[in-house]
Amino acid sequence: MISYRFLLIILVAFVFGCGGGGSSNDNGNTSQNNSTPVPDTSQNDDSVTDGTIRIYVAGESVEEMNRFVNPPFNEDGTLNGGSNSGDEYGWMVPFMERLRLRQPGLDIEWIGAECWLDWTWECSNGTYPFANSMQFTSAISGSTVSDWLAERGDELIRQDFCYDIAFASRGGNDLNRDVSETEYKENLRQLILLLDQGSSCRENPLIYVTAHILDIANGVKPNSEQEVTSWLESQRVYYVEIPQLLIEELSNEFPYLNLRFVDMWTPFYENKSTTAFPNETWWTTVNGVYAPDILKIHREDDYWSGQHPRRLASIFAGENVADQFYLNDLAPYIGSN
Image (cartoon, rainbow, N blue to C red; front, side):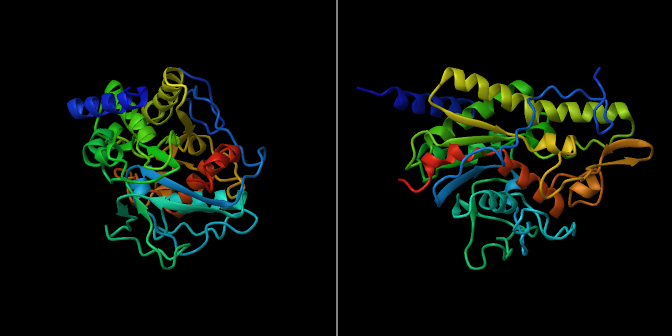
């Protein structure tokens, strides 16, 4: 008898083959934030068994480019130095280090088809925390979800990799290339269903759908408060609202899916206080306009290309992702299979 799960794999593969106003915020912006509040689980759940967890990343350049040479945090979780260098970047290392501070003895193995990259587009030469081992990812710089499925979708259909957790870290390039909301949501749906079926060793892995970091979308250079509001509203839809809605719909349609939403965008928007950044502001005033401080957040030196985080924004993003993990969720996935 053909199983339901097998039919689902065939259905997803077939679809892939064929289609291949508001109130004032504390930060001064007049945009209304209607998204679910960002949870902070760092102080309120139980520890888990020590061991290794394997993570596969279906991301963009923000996930593919990773280079650190120093620890991002002190042992107490505070920030290790205030440098905002453009030579250290990527949220993978800070995420991993913050998660290990929350659960000492937890290790992470990064799974994927290619090496982490540095800014020269070569394999990353970052020495922290991996001095002698290359880390891997299936993130693709510059890719929309459709692009990613075209290049990497077969990895999941063939179950090339064994992973316990998958990140679907999407949205930036879809918004930048004017992919419609409907198309973006449908492509993201296909990706999530493939990630659920794609691990060679794990039935229904944990899938974390992450909102993209706050950036310059569509090359917008805001010159007025209204432009700032419009710019941020478009990002909220793609980076927060669509992923949240899709997770809710898929969880109702397929109750066996293990889906979580992780929000990297809202903490920047709200100047969220964290252990490493208790009083940080990610906003500034430029030519009389109060707007996100793109030159502080991103490596690029102009407002037209701010999409890749500098050291501090990378650490802040990774810390927030790790603090939205419930450690109890990880327990069944550590040290088995």
